[in-house]
Length: 442
Image 1: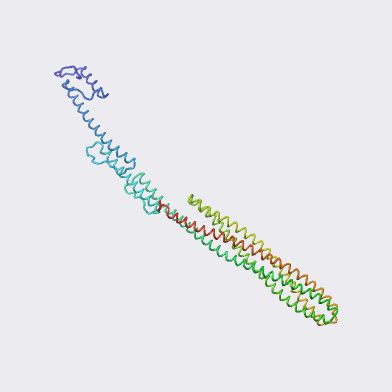
Image 2: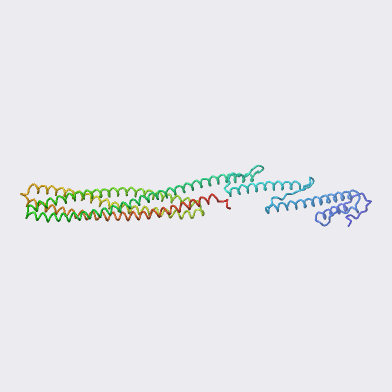
């Protein structure tokens, strides 16, 4: 359709023609037309219409080029977004209107690809407990560079933490082994204590039997002293017999005194062993507390370790209570032993006095009646003292038996703690090996 109604030969411009030309240009801007018809134009308007059509043709070519370029760019960006960092824009012409954009996209893809590859390689090495592989920062700028430096610093920190954790765990395992060894050694000491207590109990029983025998002998001496009132000869015979018995009693009392003192020394040694057990129990309790803290820091990986540490702490508390009970029993035994020593000393004095009386009887037969009466009284006292010794020795025997039972109980507890310590060593060692292999299996 013609834009103008005037003739081709007209070279003048009128207002109507110009207005119509402008309206048609307006139709181009709104999409009502795509080109200006130059066939019906002449002169200046024809030239102007040709110029407008040329601009339209050039714009369409550039628009098509932009659309094609943007489509290629969009395809590569979509691939990058989906994780395919191998895609690049190729065959970029120098006169391509989107060439700067394409080169920029390729540069971005190169930097992103390099960062992802470097970061992936570094983190993969970390997962295998290899911490020297760092992210290379050459060519990385801005946030890429900052993130790479952050990963490198985190790798160094993680390396230090793993090293510290490994060292701490190794020290913990060594400490647990030392505790298990100490408990094993202490178990031997407790076994010796139990054997000594059993022997002391047997010796106390023997001493009590000897004292009872001495009491019976003293009663015989008393009967003989009464017979001395009838016959001087009988008195001399009984005095001689009494002297022999009292000397034998003195020897037995000396032996009893040695046994009682040995028992007293043994109980003192038991106190030292109990103090050592208490000290080790306290150290075990402290180590269990530290293990619980470390297990809490280790999170889920340390739950099993925390259960074992809690059980060791409970056993340490039970051990401490058992040693307190044993200490009380040992104290009672020491008191009984001291009383036994005092009684034996008293009995020894009595026997000595009997010997003196017997000598006086031998040298002064004329005073036999008075002397015999005195001997009878003294012998009765000796019999009473001997009975007291027998009762005290029975208490010593009972105390030694209780001490032996307590030592057996303590030995059982120590064996249980030793077993648990061994299990803890195994679990701690397995935990350490698992921690070292973390990442390697993954």
